[in-house]
Image 1 (cartoon, rainbow, N blue to C red):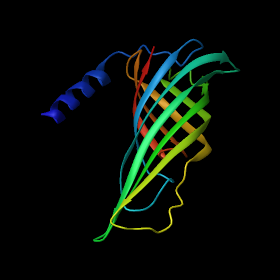
Image 2: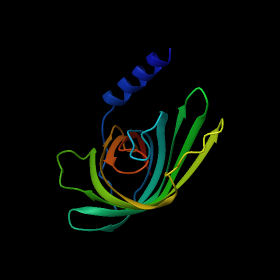
Image 3: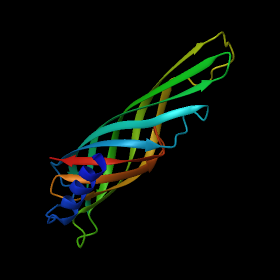
Length: 178
């Protein structure tokens, strides 16, 4: 049933007229995404990363707009043997800025951007069953370069995808512009 509802909603969005404008000065956007792949840990089994970000267009710069905003993302991993279990949890919180390029006038529904995030990775670790080996996955300050794009289906709703180092390497989801 969920698949039918999703396909129907997607068909309505695809067949709707598109009046979207590119990201402008004064525009705000919220991204909600799911991430795949991470450089935070490679052990055991992990859950998909979830993230949210918000940004606001502040300055016009050449053929585009510079935005500033915030980011939060979370992921975790578990490694289990017969005698012990290890768990890692990572929450990344940061400030990010992006440049939204307006060079595609023939595709006003496309919003390509690139940016930089400076953030802090709050790492936590726990173990059960007596494991006392090394744990080198600590908290710390870091940065991320990212490259992304939004494709607006309506004036205010878009799909987005980003690549870059952060809580995940690839991040995709839905974006809301207001």
